[in-house]
Length: 120
Image (cartoon, rainbow, N blue to C red; front, top):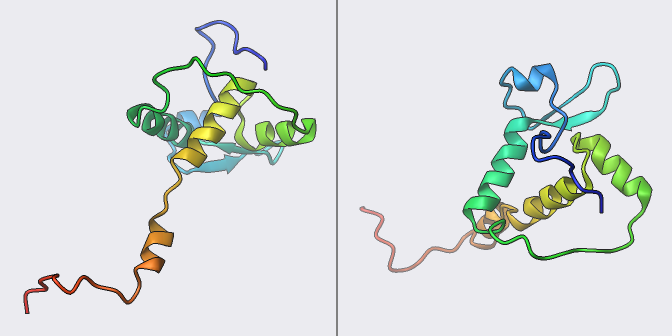
């Protein structure tokens, strides 16, 4: 795994001027290359939620495995994240924090607690 280098290096995606200007879209395409880059807001929201959930408190684990270089290259291109460690951390946090509201809502469709007081 590649290290991110110095502590002062910006973490996460390479931010465009448009993203730095405060756009809150979940991502955008670069005008010159057409590459999709996640927004700073999305990256920070995911990482902050992971931090608040206690998922980033201890960093003593190490992960290793063989993956396709094409997969890593495309993931970096899609997100704008350059460091392997940041890419893995963002990907794992995104999966760990996945919202299951839609699935839960579908499962409960047509069911209501008989004890529920609706007020009429």
